Image 1 (cartoon, rainbow, N blue to C red):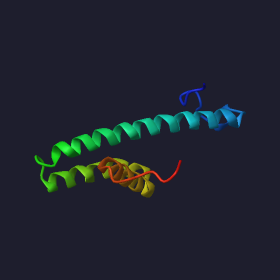
Image 2 (image 1 turned 60 degrees about the vertical axis):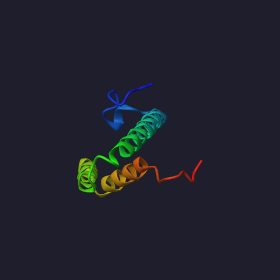
Image 3 (image 1 turned 45 degrees about the horizontal axis):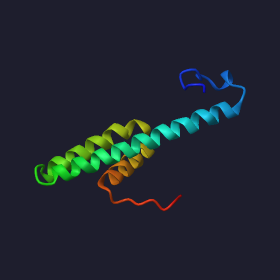
Image 4 (image 1 turned 90 degrees about the horizontal axis):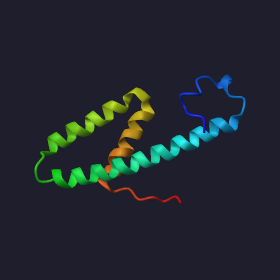
Length: 95
């Protein structure tokens, strides 16, 4: 499989399937990372309930959102979705 490092410009790849394969691969990696992040966040959240103030938790969540700002307005939405998944309150309706 061609890695993202090898595809630097669209005209480097004549076959659109190679681009789609790379996107599919990245989707798998993102999904695995989001699932792991959610597990860790839920574990940390359970441990923090009794030891961390609401203000400290809010500061942490704001820092998470700040990291995603570089993606623009959709980055904030992505950050919010990750925070919701980390709280364990989101259920899948697809699939």
